[in-house]
Image: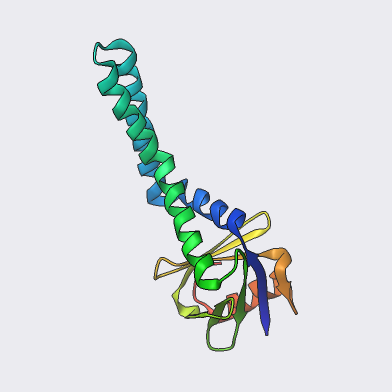
Length: 163
């Protein structure tokens, strides 16, 4: 059985949130709010309505970055409260029938191999994307009883996704 096990803490959880801010549909929203902030800053400098445009400039920056970071921190604090710890272990087991994800001792999620859409590798991280819009993150140096190459070979055999 192939397993991937790593610790989830505030630093890692924030890095995941920041990565998601700059990918997919969220990237479009981030770019949109940055452009709005630039327009409001330009209007703020060259217009007589300084306070009006400055308030909208600040709101645009809030929507582009700060709001997401606040939500990510709140989500992490909620998860930490559920786990009764500031960090917990996530174990991803590649069983014969499905992928089993266990976080700490309270959550278990089962994911089907057939739902895998794609697998992306970047440096030490592997992202497995599913039809359910779930992204499962693995770390190449956190495999137990196997390594990433044997896991990749196993996934190629069990899934129909283009790997």
